[in-house]
Amino acid sequence: MCRFVIYKGTSPVQLSHLLTRPCHSIINQAFDSRLRLDRRRPMNGDGFGVGWYDSVYDEELGSQPCIFTSVTPAWNNVNLTRLAEKIKSPLVFGHVRATTAGSLSLDNCHPFVHGKLMFMHNGGIAEFPVLKRRLQKDLPDVAFDMVQGNTDSEWAFALFLSKLPDPNARSFTSETLRKAMTDTIASLNQYAEEFNITEPSLMNFCVTDGETVVVTRYISSKTEEAASLWFSSGTEFSEYAEGGHYKMSKADKRENIIMVASEPLTFERADWMEIKTNHMVVITPKMNLLQIPIKDKFYVPPSDPAAAKRKTEFAHEKGFLNLREPISDKPLKSARRHTLTH
Image (cartoon, rainbow, N blue to C red):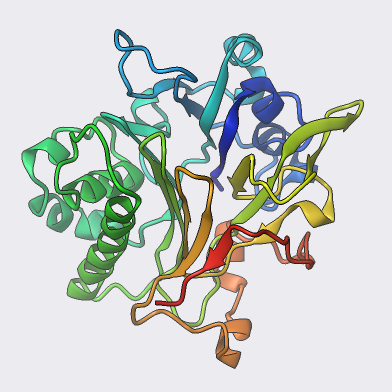
């Protein structure tokens, strides 16, 4: 399985504290099969990518993110280690890839970028070669020409760009990004219907413009569970014991840090909360975290007993879900975290 991590903070984080030093970082999970949810393969070395925004805007550098990708295993890339020790950023995307669609190449490594926007995916679009041409037909030139690789993930990003009023805009509202993400999922479901594709698609998408972050935990099924996704928030993410043992501290009600990850990055049970299936998470520029249901034909309200009976076999067999006991069963209190029901 691929896995990703997102960091958004009021202060920049040194990339090493997120990617290379923690003993349970996504990079170490990819290397050490004992830490992985997907144990079908002993290692996860089909490339990686890191994207980040400058801490201070520089007119000469522009507002677009910087991307570093490689097809070498992340745990064995000395350049990543060197860069991570010298770079700080308030908004970081990290992705470790296990190929499900597309060849092993730099063009296929996440995150993907267009202008200010950065995009990642964990999952897979069912029978993507069947609907690929149909998707391409709906794309304007600016979105079609953006694609450099051959993954379902990058074409999903192109589809997302086609849903924006202006993909080259200098700024985006949270509502604009949220609506474009909802429309992207709706179109992919429409294509699946047109071609009578019944296998569910796993669409854990995330996008940011450097200010707002939009993430989905989604599956096109009313009965199956989606790929895993967790979040953590607090005032400080720091090493509390030698050997890369990190934890999220919460000194007060402020949200100085919000992290989203395919798998929890710490062993502390109280650090992480599971995001509900078929929900969207929006992290606003003011560090509010909103959980918003994606209400379509695959939505099951949490109050419906069927929501607790989603089957786990599909996502587990694909390597996208952990069948072990959840890491956290205690809700994290926050004065600025909301679940929207409209």
